Image (cartoon, rainbow, N blue to C red):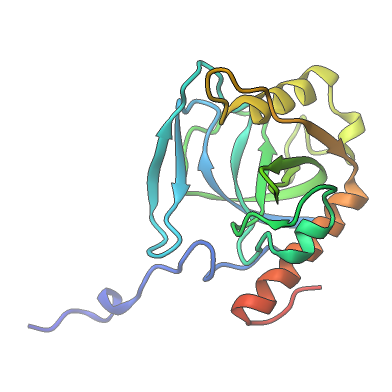
Length: 205
């Protein structure tokens, strides 16, 4: 049995088969795994590229923004070296949160995002940075250029979510430290280099 040619066109792997964006580290592409409406944590399957259920959230805390990763990045040794106390990166693609004024409730989508800062997170002895960005061209957040321009309560919500979303009973929240846009650019460059070292392909500088 033969099929028309489109049947032989495979979907690109979201981590390896999609570019990091039009102008990284300033403007990147984000693959969205979780929306602000999700009470279940979804995560990309690294082998087949499909979204899978990682775990239901234990608490009532919801993500304050779109949440996913930057394709063709890796939190490896270079990313780990930028976080005090980390021995390495967590071995995952670099996480990113994207703020949008209009509610977006679809996951497994790509959005163009302007980087404004980030959050340092130490998971055990592994760096697990969260890049913060705004939806490119957003009518409310689009003019924000640095984390310092966001409302303090929004940064507080982001810090609280990531300090508690893996929290087990009796454990203490994880320390979360915000950082500015220049450091976020440094983290993204390091993650692009870490990916290139492990998986090859063109190096985006």
